[in-house]
Image (tube, rainbow, N blue to C red; front, side):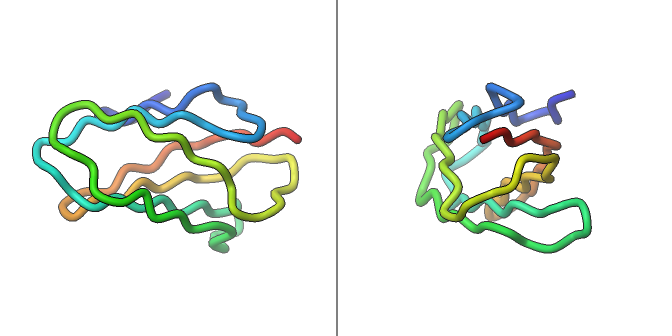
Amino acid sequence: QAEQGINVYPNPFRGAAHIDLNLEKGSDVRIELYDLSGKMVDLANMGFQFGGTNTMVYQPGTDLLDGIYLMKVITETKSYTQKVVYRN
């Protein structure tokens, strides 16, 4: 179930995930990935994204184990959390 304002696909993902993000105004965006224990396992700065619909490509900067993660997409004014499944 996608949270309003964000869509992550494919899910499950392997290698890279695409993230559609709707922004009311331009913002710096970062992605934090957490395992289910709450430990941050990856951080990616996606740079400045313009207002409107943006499609970003997220590639984990670290070797991930297969499993379920919480992806947090953080803008200057909001954060969105999406459950994602990673498969090698």
